[in-house]
Image (cartoon, rainbow, N blue to C red; front, side, top):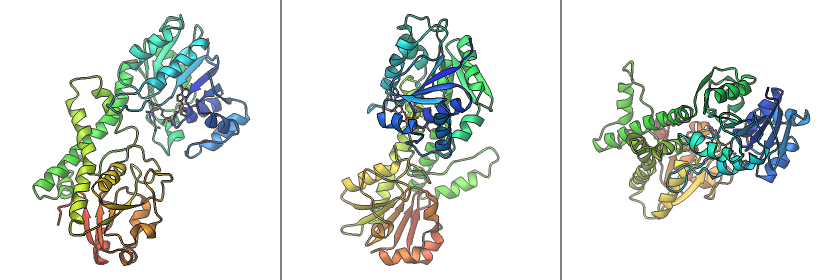
Length: 420
Ligand SMILES: NC(=O)c1ccc[n+]([C@@H]2O[C@H](COP(=O)([O-])OP(=O)(O)OC[C@H]3O[C@@H](n4cnc5c(N)ncnc54)[C@H](O)[C@@H]3O)[C@@H](O)[C@H]2O)c1
């Protein structure tokens, strides 16, 4: 029996682009979200998240009747679960959203259906967590209801392009499940579709982000080691990268976002052997403490120092502040009695009050660049210096032309450079 209708649970950064692409591909799509505001907006052809091209796609899908948003699921040939899998306080995967979503489809499951878990999950979640819930329907998973994990690896800001062109891993709980899931994605995916088992698919997704996290931890540790030895870490990296098989990353104030700083913990949670992966997380999570130590040194001679933080998103040119190192830096500075002022041209509604750029710099003793937004590369140090009480700048992203700042009378430091 061919797949004609799909029910997508969770209409966020992953679920909504997926649902609207499937609708554009000719499937009848029911998009389900718990959030009433999200459902109402989508049914009016509007979207609640920022993603280039998405509004046009959603509006066309809704106007053509191929996409309808609802509060609860309905019968369909395939179900796709794309709900959040955040980290708990004790660094474990919170699977409660997956549980609720899976339970909500039980009354609608019929023989011949396919259920796909897209949410990033710890290894064996599909087999050991999702399958027992689906079995409560009375249907036999792997026979009467097919089940697969199909992880997402898209880059926010380029999601529609990557959903179509990226290679896709599909892990079935058995080969029949993987083959059926391939049938669904084949209509929209132009990259390769690779079939495997569910646990390997879960682990592959987690290792992609872990690979990056561990490599960043390596250079962050080099930054700490070099400082201890009074060496210049950036010079060491430059020299080491001349080797044809070495490609060290760049140190930074920590690792944020909802993927790199979260996914490695899903492996740690499941394995006692994951020592390096845990350590890498700890090294990266320790970087805001190191940055704050350096900031305190830089304003150590000032009675009531005022520090300006430029950039609070977790990386440059995005508005996402989830798990951002800047948040830890701000909290640690405030706890140690340092007055902070914040400016970020991309972020609205941050948990700490923001100022406009001039107010953020007025009477300040130190500017700390914590996110490498494009705008910061074009700042005019001479004009900023006039506003400040002391002309000092600390670039934690190695994104400023510090020579220009020094020429304007600034004392400039860069994370990873030998401290003067
Ligand atoms: N955003 C990314 O760039 C990205 C990339 C790769 C993987 N992922 C993974 O994809 C999954 C979804 O992430 P996201 O960024 O789309 O999350 P999100 O927070 O943007 O959206 C999730 C949506 O699910 C809804 N929801 C929660 N419980 C529900 C339920 N029981 N039924 C229906 N809707 C429900 C929420 O209201 C929300 O609108 C996560 O596991 C995430 O780790 C995300």
